[in-house]
Length: 107
Image (tube, rainbow, N blue to C red; front, side, top):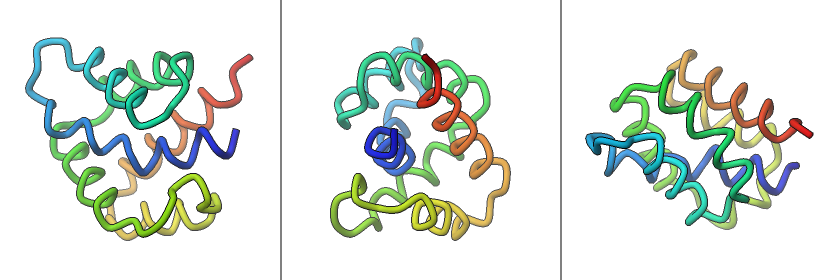
């Protein structure tokens, strides 16, 4: 779970570049898979991220992802939470963590 959850939180910002696309959910899913997220987890994550995050939220995640040094998969949950907290956006942090954790824990 940890290896799938952590890269997701830090790499889902890659979808910001395609936020204006017609099928945004599909684009989100595609970028998550390209970032190394398993297809089943990416499918689960794409819908809530599409519904709950604005284009600006996605841009914030993209900026954050650009500041990460090293392999995001090796970051602890605390490090990811700390990084998200630097954005100063409680909604973005909550949605990202809730969605990733919820999907990672699904059977």
